[in-house]
Length: 541
Image 1 (tube, rainbow, N blue to C red):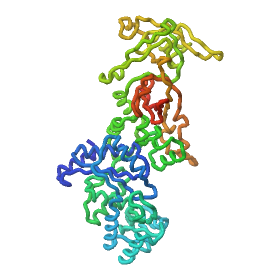
Image 2 (image 1 turned 90 degrees about the horizontal axis):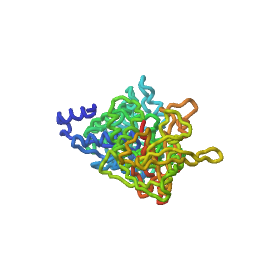
Image 3 (image 1 turned 60 degrees about the vertical axis):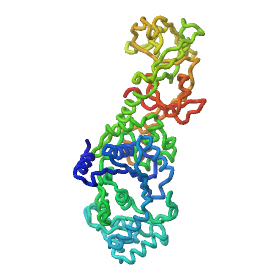
Image 4 (image 1 turned 60 degrees about the horizontal axis):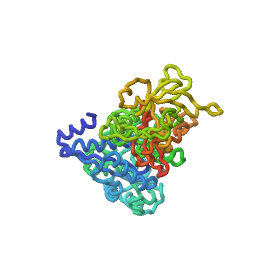
């Protein structure tokens, strides 16, 4: 049990909120969700489910300049893909009329005023935490004047940035967020839902707590950077005398080799450092999905990381481990050769095609088996043969033996080379008594290698992804450099591969284990004529 669950269970035991639990996930639709948001999604929806409560999806759409319907749709898709369904769908813009009415109430009660200062002047007036700030020269306007100016702001009489509405919380708190915070600013910009109805928009700190209150949220769970905002959250609820949810903070997810800033992720997309928001190297949920992560693996990761009160950095290898653990259970096994060299079985009949029985998933007996054609000429991995090998190399060598997966033991007898000395073919003989399942198949050899029959192989494009950044902390840069200088130049390698022809019938996002190579999934760029595979993770750490 984590500390948030302890708080909730104590509230339930004491009958607080009639022992009900109602959470919410409140993203701003100004970008695509990433793995950090996935942790918050799993937490908020998971807590609601555990305690028989509800979880809302509410879009914090208070900044029309940065928000778009595209992001709204992507957020819904990501949450559904993770396996969650919200109880109610809301938008902060649903409450613009109520928020405006409450703002007028605060003005009438002498708790808010219109300020004509510029943003720079307001920031300078707040001062520093160790000394009280300076009151605005407009702070003592009359209620009537403030109400008139605020209504004229709403009616569009003033240009952007010329006036703001501020709360009268005082200028002496060491918490800078409590020094007469801005409630409304002027933005003549079309909103994705309300159009041009409004030209003033509430700030996050004013809209968030009141939106929670309207929806009857009991526990407003957010990341640790909002801890300093909590006194203001409480102040607005108390000043307006409305339902007061409890804000609880937890440590946000920081992942090694990863950038979590939406602004920086947007820069990667706009400047074409990546293929888009769903680039498989991106930490976005849609990027993880395209790379081949399963919803279960992401949920398992969130559960394994747990909930903490202090920020820390989680090694990205834990995320990769969770993917590997789940894919081992669900991925269909198949054979593919990424760096091919031809293997010719000299004593195998020229026109013979023998069907080998291959297991689809040893972790799941219900997955069944498939038949794989075996012929005289096969493709194998170039790395599985060495002409001159030491005793630690157990795969194929001149005069050495290996087992071909699901098939026979073969012995290398010779090799062919081109004029430059490159190996073009490896000649072997096979022992027909050593087929998998035969009595003689128990004869021991030190290695088993995979293969694909030359005449029964399809050509596919394989994208081998590495970490997008070359250093564990890409945000830590020397003076004069940016996080872009830490990009990994080898984060993507593309090559052709030979695969079993049965894969040509596969659907996008289906998961495979390329035996001995790693976990892969079919990319959306695939066509009927050409499959494209993304490498998700390797078989081992």
